[in-house]
Amino acid sequence: MTEPAPPLRVLLVDDDEPIRRAQRRAIARDGYEIHDASSGEAARALLAAARAERRPFVLMVVDLQMSGISGTTTIEAALEIDPDLQIVVCTGSDCQIDEFHTSDALLIIKKPFQAIELLQAVRALTTKYQMTQRVRANMHELERTVEARTRELRTVNDELAKEMARRDRIETELRLAHRLEAVGHLASGVAHEINTPIQYVGDNVQFLGEATRDMFEVIDTLGAAIATSASPTLLALFEELAARVDLGYLRDEVQRACESAQHGTLRIARIVGALKELSHPGGKDPQPTDLNRTLEKALEVSASSYRYVADVVSDLGPLPPVVCHAHELGQVFLNLIVNAAHAMENPEHVRGRLAITSKVEGTDVVFSIADSGAGIPEAIRDRIFDPFFTTKEVGRGTGQGLAIVRAIVERHGGSLTLESALGVGTTFHVRLPIAGAVRRSTATATAAA
Ligand SMILES: Nc1ncnc2c1ncn2[C@@H]1O[C@H](COP(=O)(O)OP(=O)(O)O)[C@@H](O)[C@H]1O
Ligand SMILES: [Mg+2]
Image (cartoon, rainbow, N blue to C red; front, side, top):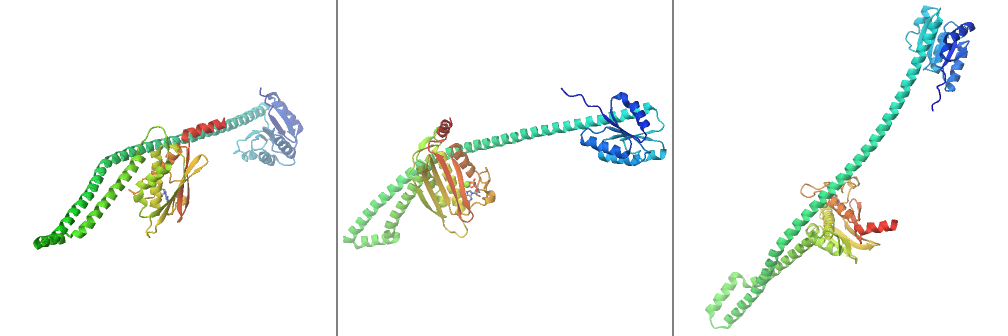
């Protein structure tokens, strides 16, 4: 329950005691708490005390002609103490009225006045005071409500922004996953298509090598026979023919050409095999995988990117099978290797060093891919994982590499960290749980329970 409001305080200021009494009688019926002061000084003290008490006077009735400090000075002092104070000024002279005509806190009544005139003036001003107070309280309340609503809105807005960011991220990951799958299918298809022709090219080159070896044997035997035969014409013809085609040179070079072609086809076959293995979309479930092998395949298919700019030093420790999507991790290694190779290209053609390591750490395996390249400037370090962020020229970089890497590693319950120093190089660390993403989370759940 709210307490009844205390009566409004009214102060009567006049140096004439009977007048104050008459004024008190005139307004008494409205239930004010009436105080009186016989001088401006006394009025000032009462006003200040009431204000300090936090029960200020609402209204002051003041006479302009007083002994001691004048009514005008009293009014000025009173408004200084309490700017909200309402004032009824009683005056006998017109010239003094002009001094106050601009203030709306003042009502002037001219002597002699009726009791009812004073009562009406007091009522009008106290009502105005109360209404002003009420409006002020309402304004306060309104401001508080607006503030609270603004806060709520801000919170909702923040949540909305977070949700939108989350959706954006999921959408990007989904797009990347689709893209990865499509690229994987494409690569796997291309590898499959190349596989058959490269096989018969290889077989035929091998056949040609063997056949020419046999043919040279025939030619050499024939040449020897002709040399020992008694026919100088035949020998001259043979020697002329042999000189025309440079038979000795052909014998060496055809063999070498066949060997080199065979070498080449073997190499193509190996790369295609690695590509097939890496891009194989695999089943839906992660499988125990020899990730060192996956890494070696990735090195194999990306050899053209680093062969001319760096030497590879790899130190792969023995690893247990890691539960993962092998082709996705092949993509991770590929992207990191290609980035490292790009970072080591320089106009002075200083050869770089690509150091690759793998090891077991607790329940994780950790791969490090370190280059001696340009390094990543601090200013862009938190943007390099953004999809489409690239510092490379059009056609060289798509800006998707690291976004894909991070999405894959996180999907596997792992983490991706990097160290980089300008002019020294960059190392990316890929940490993956040996048991795979799903099993690890149940393990943590059990541990927490
Ligand atoms: N090993 C690295 N050394 C220096 N900068 C790198 C390295 N790897 C990535 N970056 C920087 O990160 C950017 C984004 O890489 P990435 O997402 O793979 O896209 P892209 O290679 O297509 O530019 C690169 O453009 C490059 O500026
Ligand atoms: Mg890249």
